[in-house]
Structures are given as C-alpha cells and as structure tokens.
Image (cartoon, rainbow, N blue to C red; front, top):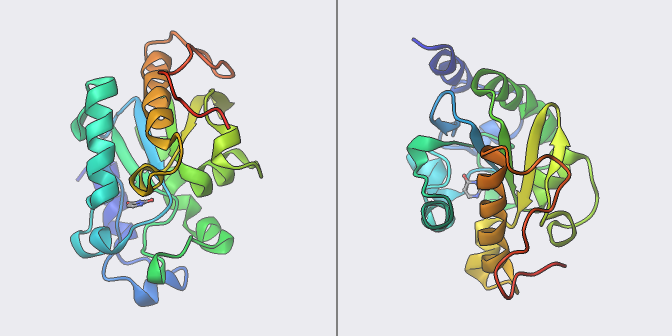
Length: 202
Ligand code: URA
C-alpha cells in the first residue's frame, strides 16, 4: 500500500470531530499522488458524501470542464481535496474548529503530494489557508507565496453555477494563472496577464 493509500485508510475511520456523527463516509482526496497541482475545496456535499470522492456533483463537473478547457488537464493530472473530509450537515460551511481538527489530514496529503501550485476554491479554503479575512473577490486574481508553494485563489465552482457576477470568467482567468505558475512563468505574488474580457476584479 502506498503512503497515501495508507493515510486514506487511516482517515476512513476518523472520529476526531462532530462531523463524523452525521457523515455517510469520509471523503479523502483523490488524483495523481505526485501532482504539481492541488485543488482545495471546503468540504464534501451530499453527492460526495454518497460516492466517497471529492467534487463529483455539479460543482465538480464544472471544475472538470473549466480545468480541461483552460489548462488541458483531467483529474488524473492533479489532486483534489477539501479542508474537511466529512460532509457538514445541511451543506453548511465547515466550522473553524472542524477545519483545525481535520488539518493534519490535509497537511499530510500536502506533504506526500508536494504540489507546486495550490488552487483554493472559494472563501472558506482561501481565507483559512492564507489566514486572511477578505472575501474571494478581493483575494483572487493573483498568486500568493505559501509554505514554499504558490497559492492561486479562485471562486468556488458553486459561485459560477449560481451565476455570481464575474465568477465564471474569474475562475477561467485564475486557472490560466495556475497553468502559468505550473510552467514557472508566474512567481508567487504576481497577478500575471489580465484575464478575459469581463473578468471580475472585485
Ligand atoms: N464542494 C466542495 O467544496 N468540495 C466538494 O468536494 C464538493 C463540493
């Protein structure tokens, strides 16, 4: 068994926080075990809780599509995981103490995979990872140095599905930024090229 598979097996019985009581199953990260690119969401929803894999519902299908169209990537080229591995009841945001309790699982995945670029999806993952209070509209559109890696924040795909102003164009532009960062063409702290027309900068 690989180290990552052993970690997933260990996590599958985790009862460290209250989310264990209401989950169907633990939803651990999935993808290439040595991916240069890692997507970080907030937590599993109903579809993920039922299937046992991250981002398999509508948000995940949109992420797959934009990733393919803007980066030429499939899930096999990257790794996808969440701030918490268990579904928060009623799809509420994961609470700070739940994310803190789940953090060792995320840190262990990051240590194993050692991605160059982390794309944070939405407010919860972005604020928590970067330790910032601003919203995703303010934080996205550039890269951030973080623990020897490059973080590129973008909208959660659910914002694009809800039709949030500029979310789809912004997500597309940010994934282009992630591709440039992977190619070493954008260092942490840079904005990179302007996004497509209509990209939100809020
Ligand atoms: N939303 C998330 O943040 N993560 C998932 O895995 C699915 C939906």
